[in-house]
Image (tube, rainbow, N blue to C red; front, side, top):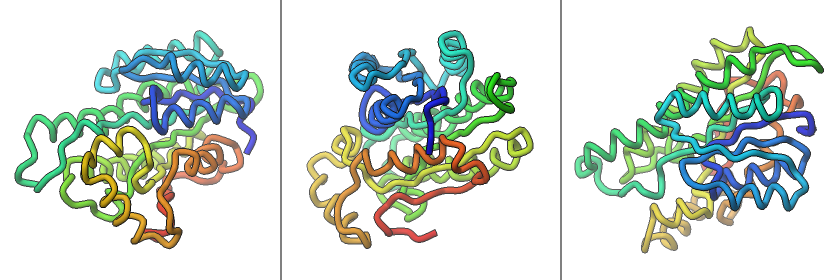
Length: 257
C-alpha cells in the first residue's frame, strides 16, 4: 500500500478524521493538501511532525470556485493531484430529532455541504487527474466518506442519513463515468467515529449512543479515527487499482454488505 508517490487532497482536514488522514498519509510519504473552511494550522503542524510535506488551503466545499482553487494550489505546489478524500461534512452542527421537526434551512445546509460539496470537489479534481504524469499514465483515486447512517438507516437524523445515502449513489454513478479514464471512485461507510463532530452531534446522549452502536457490532468497541487509516491508504494506493464503485463498511461488523 505504497502512497509515497501520491499527492492527496483532503477536505475537512482541520480536525477529526481529515486531520488523522493527513497525518497518516504524510507519515507514509504522501504530499498532502489539507483543506477546510476552518484553520488547518494544527494539521500542518502534525504533518511537519511526521517530516511530511503539505500545504493548507481554505476551502468552502459549497463554492465550486473554492474547490477549483484548492486543486490549483495543489498542482502549483506539487505538480499534480493523484487522490481526493472527500471528508468534509456537516455533522456536529446538525440537530437531531424527528424527521418532521428538522428545520428546512438545516436540511438544505446538510445537502449543500455533504452532497453538493463532494460534487464540487470531484468536478475540480478530475481534470487534474486526467493530466499525464511523468511516472505513469493519468488517473487517480477519489475516496468519499459516507456513513453507517446510510447503510443502516439512522433515525432521528434524517438530513444526515439522507445526505450520506446520496454520497453512496454519487460514488457508484461517478465510478461508472470515470472508469475508462483510469479514475477510481470508492466510499467508506464508518460507524460513529470518536471525533469532535460525533461528540457535538450526540451531545449529552453521547454515552448512550456509543453504547447502542457498540452493542450492534461484532467487534465490541467504538471506532477510532486510526481504524479508518488502513482502508484509506489502500484506496489511495495502487494496491486497489481494480477496485471502483464500492462502499466499504468500517463499522465493526454492523452492516455486512
